[in-house]
Image (tube, rainbow, N blue to C red; front, side, top):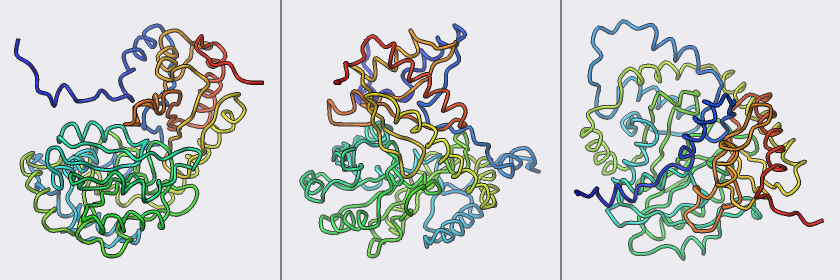
Length: 401
C-alpha cells in the first residue's frame, strides 16, 4: 500500500478542533454546547463590511494582484499609520488569512530543518504551520507564576543553534492574554541583532488590550531588515470566515520572496479583500464597544473562576483567552467527558486542553484555554456549568484542607 508523506504523518491535529466529533454527538443528543474552545466571537461583524458583500456592481469576479489589491493595501497603510506604524502600501502583501502570512514568513526566512524560537504556551497552529514548512518550533517556557512574562534573555539565548533563523511572538498573546511590554520587545530586538535573526510578530489582537498599551514590532528602531509583521481581519472585525490577512516588512528580499509564494497560489480572494477594504472605514466606536464587551466577558469569567476551589488562572491583559489550571487528573480527559458524559440542565461547555499549546511534554496537562467569545450571560452560564462539572467529574483531584 502506498504511504503518505512524512510531512502528512507529522501534521498535528488541532487541539482546538479535535473534540468536534464529541461536540457534534452531544448536539445530536439534544445537549446545548457553549463553545469556549475556539476564538470565534459572537460580536457582530461591522455592517459596512457585510454590506460590501451584499451590494456591489461586479460583473466578473476576476483574479486580483498576487500581493493583494492596491487600493486595499493603501487603506491598510493608512490604518497602520493611525496606530503609529509607518509602513507603505508597497511594504504590505495581502494573504489568505493570517495563517498564510505566518506560513509565507516561515518559508521566506527558513529552510527545511531550520528553527524558530517562540515562548510557550503559544498559538497551537504554529505547530501545524511548522510541520507544513518543515520548520522546527523551539519553545522557551513562560510561566504563570511569573505572569507569562517573556522568559529571561539567557534562556532564549540558550536555545539558539546554528539552525535558528527567527524568533516569533504573538502580542497580545494567544493563549495567555499576556501583553508584552516595550522593554521585553527590546530584549528580543537585542537578541535578534546579536545573532542575525528575523523577528516575526503576530499582532492580530492589537485592538484588544485591557491593561497597558500595545507595542508593535515596527515601533522598535534598527529592525528594518529583520522585522516581519503578520496580521488578520478575523478578530479585529469579528470576521473569522473572511480569511484575509497580511504580511508587512521593509525587507525587500523577504517581500520579493513572499510575492513569489503568492504568485504560486495566484491571488488572495478578491471579494473578501473588497469587504476588508470597506471594513477599514469602521468607526472607532465599534472597537471601543468591542473592547468594553470583551472586558466585561473576561470579568464575568473570572468572577466565577475565582470562587472555585483548586482553580487558578491569570486574568488576561489582552486578547480574549485565558489559561486556567483545573483540579483534574487530565484536562484532555475532562474536556472529552464534558461532551460525552456530562450535562447540566441539558447544557455543557466545550474547552480546549492546554497541553496542545505547549511543545514541551508534560506541560499544561491539567489546564485548559478558555475563550471568552460569547456574551456575558452565556459565559457566566458556561462557568456555572463548569463549576458543576468539576464537582461531578470522576477524575477530580482531592484538595488539601
